[in-house]
Structures are given as C-alpha cells and as structure tokens.
Image (cartoon, rainbow, N blue to C red; front, side, top):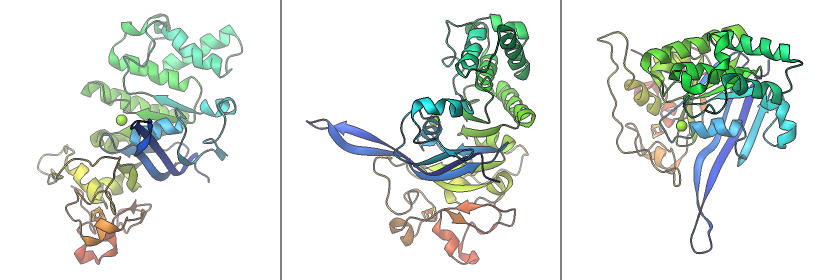
Length: 340
Ligand code: SF4
Ligand code: MG
C-alpha cells in the first residue's frame, strides 16, 4: 500500500542577505535533499543534534514557509505546490505538537476556545451540542477532566499544558501528527507520561507520527523506525531494533554511544566526536561527516556517499550513506552488530 506521507528530495535553503546592495551573499543549506515516507499508523523518528535541519523538515511539511525544492505527497496528493486555500482540508490531516507548552498556548484564551478554534476552522462541528461533545471527547482522549475546558492555560502544569497541546492537534482529526521536541522541555517523569499518552493515542486512533527529537533514549522507547540527520541530509534510516542494535553509519554509532543504558555494565563505549558540527552555510565536500568521522578515508573527502540498502542481520529496510559498506566486511567496522 502507498505510504500516508511521502517526501521526495526535499530542500530548504535560506538565503543570507548582505553586502552594500543587500543581495543574496550565501545560503544556509538547512535541509538539502532528503526523502522518506511514513505509513499509516507508523511512528518515524527524525533524530540528530540541534541545527541538523530536523525542525526545518517539520516546518516545511506544515508549509510554514515555501520549499526550495522537492515533493511532499499526503495520501496520494501533492501538497507542496498547493495554494494556501486549497491546502486547508489537507492541513487538517497533518497537525503539530510544539516543544514549549508554555508559549504554544494563547494565555488569553480558555482551553475551550483553544480547542474550539480548529474545530470551527475546519468546519467539523454542526451544532453547539456537537461542539461540546467534541470538547469532552478531546479532554477524555488526553486524560484531563472534562470541566478543565473552562480554565486558562496558566492554571495548568507543563505536562497538562502539553496534553492540551495534543488535544488541540487532535481536534482536526488528523492522520499524522508532527511532534517537534514535544517532550524535550518536560521533567523526566512527565516526559514518560506524555510519551505513553502519544503511544496510546496512536494505537487508539491509528495515527501516524513524525517524532522529531534529539533524545535517543526516548526515541528507542517508542518509535517504529528512525531516520538520522546530519547537516541537512539523512545519513541512515532503519527499523528501531536495527538502528539501535546494528547502526550502519558512524554518526549514528557515535550518537548511540552517548545514550545511557538501563542495564548497568553494558554501556556502549563512548565515542567522542572531534570538532563541532560544521556550518550549514558551507558544508564539507564529499561525505559531510568526514571532518568528524573516526573512520574517514580518502574517498570520503571527495565523493558524497548515497543513501542505499545495507546488509543487516537484524532486519530489512536498513539504508545508510557511508562508503565503508563498499569494503569487505573484515575492513568495515560497522559490518556486524554493535548493540549493547
Ligand atoms: Fe565516515 Fe567516510 Fe562513512 Fe562518511 S563515508 S561516514 S567519512 S567512513
Ligand atoms: Mg530544533
């Protein structure tokens, strides 16, 4: 079956204006040609360090700004080149939960109005009785008391506010929710509750999720597949078990080495990457990771590796962009399983 969301060669470059005439003097290659898809009811996590472009992907999908290039196909319909008006019915199907539950809710609106706004905008409610029923159903879904709709955002804790943010995202009955660091700002115990809620909702409603996060410990707990981004590119995509058990890209391996393990004594050996993430204004030639990769060799400095299928004993559907996989297994440090 066709995927719910299909993204083909998505690019978002931000021009930098400067000089005497204020012309474009450089570009930030924030997202530089990435492709992925999400099936109905699937969670795909998009991970990477801050500045890798993952939030830009989420914003581009929501059409918060025009794309530089590429295609976005939602349930068979191209939405990247649609004018705003025609986009509205499709917008309903793709909703977002933001990182900060304190700034994402309008402090001058009661919860009821925050939730009623999308219901009305999308023309979902036929009568005031129907609207009330929808508000109650939304509160039930996010496990908040129904009468809390009459309260103001400041009366809630961070976790409760995030539940309201999720209820708002659900108000339009979406097929896909984009969670952009949706639990990153929350306390550890609250984080787990919100992640569990998202998982329950996904099972109940058959929702697909794009879970944008820098936190691999959380991703490991709740995702179906993972896509790893580095400097505007996807460098690896794999089902959860394969990615965490047998990473096939040196960057992924390094990221995983920093994730604390629940069982003592099996901590992965920490890989400290040299240097900082290079600027997306002038990404390195060849493999963009070569300036920091512990395994870089000559070819890496000149030839960009393509994202392609790699052998993985743990499962199917594993792709990575790394020249190591052209070498014989004996000469490829990522040929086997690396999992703890
Ligand atoms: Fe490292 Fe080379 Fe693979 Fe890039 S292509 S990740 S530099 S080994
Ligand atoms: Mg971000």
